[in-house]
Amino acid sequence: MQAFKSEEISQLQIVEREELEDEEDLFEAIDKLTSHGINAGDVKKLQDAGIYTCNGLMMHTKKNLTGIKGLSEAKVDKICEAAEKIVNFGYITGSDALLRRKAVVRITTGSQALDELLGGGIETLQITEAFGEFRSGKTQLAHTLCVSTQLPTNMKGGNGKVAYIDTEGTFRPDRIVPIAERFGMDAGAVLDNIIYARAYTYEHQYNLLLGLAAKMSEEPFRLLIVDSVIALFRVDFTGRGELAERQQKLAQMLSRLTKIAEEFNVAVYMTNQVIADPGGGVFISDPKKPAGGHVLAHAATVRLMFRKGKGEQRVCKITAGGIADAKD
Image 1 (cartoon, rainbow, N blue to C red):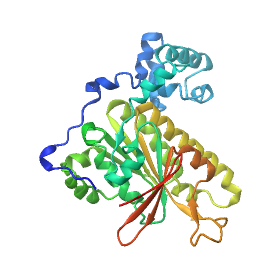
Image 2 (spheres, helix red, strand yellow):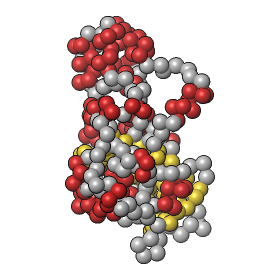
Image 3 (cartoon, rainbow, N blue to C red):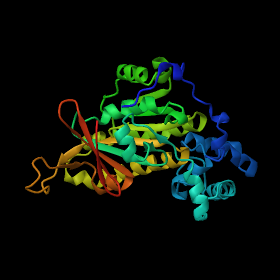
Image 4 (cartoon, one colour):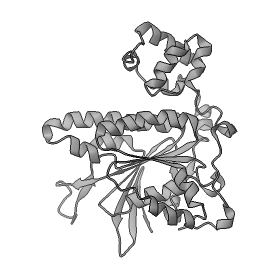
């Protein structure tokens, strides 16, 4: 684990959104529609529905937009036409795509070995999933990322705030304090830059995600944590009869996470549970696989499998275009 001296960071300072010159083209605020003939009342209706950027608007279907109270099909068509003039959602060259990739921020995990395997840390614009048994290190990494995300970018941080959605009651602010001290940061300032919400149903979890757009459009967030993404779905949907509906709702949740990652250039770190794998084979002593099936597997760009090692050691296996191991 890499530690930072306290004198290197006397006090945490997050750069405000308007000062981020490098992120000028990150997203276009929804109120810019007013300069293209859309009245302020209709813009307010979009904001009330959780849409705060033109980028986010273009990620919604017209069917969803006409479902917003007070927006007719004609109005939606006009709004979409205006948004298309502000944001280019068409084809771009490979060179332009490469330039966009330069906006990616890599956030240190606090483990040098894991960082090396991840190419520098967890990335923005994508979803990183961690699955494993209870006490295998998934939530501990989430707590570490809460702190490392707030480091300056020249110290392998994200220089941004953190949103934490907790579905299992595992967030412990007291655990943030020693991690902040380890990185030489002011624990109080670190905690102030984490917004936290406890979700109790899958619907509540989804609504919390919708509410994030308002906060992320105003302040410089760099990480969204969902711990865990599957827990409430396994509680709220029971039996095979509800499996299809569960997977459909889960897919909508994951789609929302993907859109948040791309709309606001944030890293999404979600934890997942494991289930017994009857088809694991006779040569595997304790076969387990991540919950959520193919729907969840396709959503994650990088999958981290955690398991307990000897003593306090934890082993992480990365499955993304190959398999590699890290121990810490």
